[in-house]
Amino acid sequence: MEATEKKKRGLLTAIVVAVVGGLLLVHQWLPGLPGHPMSLVETFLPWLGLAVPLGLIVAAVRRSAVTALACLTLAAVWVGVFREPLWSPDTPRTYDLTVVQHNVSDENTSPSRVARILLGPDPDVIALQELTPSSLPAYRIALDPTHPYRATVGTVGLWSKHPLADIARVDIKPAEVDAGWDRGLRAVVRSPRGDVTTYVAHLPSVRVRATQGYATGWRDESAARLGRALAADRSTAVLVLGDLNGTVDDRGLAPVLSQVRGDRDDFAFSWPVTLPLARIDHVLARGEAEVGDTWTLPDTGSDHLPVAARVRR
Image 1 (cartoon, one colour):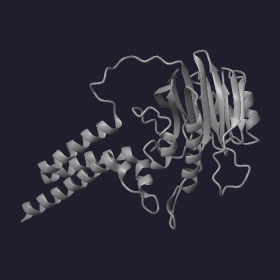
Image 2 (tube, rainbow, N blue to C red):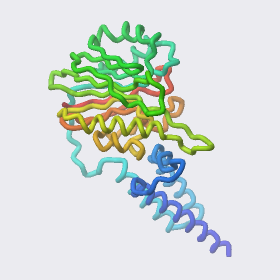
Image 3 (cartoon, rainbow, N blue to C red):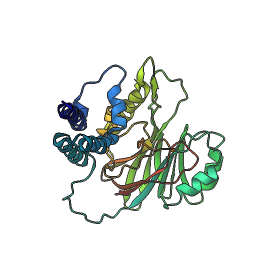
Image 4 (spheres, rainbow, N blue to C red):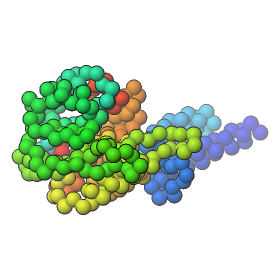
């Protein structure tokens, strides 16, 4: 009787592991539900891989070959979803630009320290969010000497080593948000290898609320507006730098991610800074611009880590 009970419990674990594997494979095709639970799951999708070691522990305790096989299958699925194929050629890639993206936090009290960390990888372009009227002069003092070309709109800014042209506000404000909410800009970076049309964006925050579930309405509306702006842009090389308050797996960002993409092979989790669990700060590109080698920089005193990336033009 005891052996039969162990087999049943081992089989139950195998079923749970199989469901997790199915979720990794088909999550994007599952219907949306009230409260947006799938967006919440997709925010932390890579962490579903923890079912593998947990399942293997159960398999060892229960001596269940079925559970062990399910765990190995899930491991293969996880690798297939999140990592480049093992057989892909490991050819060295060269890049033309280094970019840094960072939500500096409107409560950060040390812009000079922030700037010192952001300048560490010697970036060509720096995009910032949550700039305030009181902090902007300090960032200008710290960044202008090395990045003399600057554009700011509302609470977002762009600093560049290379000249900027066609600077404009991008309207990504949700309809219910008060006027004066400016979190989007567009500028053309005149890089030595050619123009790169660069967007800086900060989408609204999301919250888990008892009455609404995962409240993503404003974020999703703002993403749709940004997606339409990108779709209408005919530039041959496009970059999107920003705190999008969602990951590349989150269906709420589909309007943006249908236009641009980033580097999936490097997780570079940027939030929350105390225990980074998700990359919600992004460097995305399309056309003649391609993103690779993405990583995070040290803590700046913000609730986000800066994200740096190499870009080929």
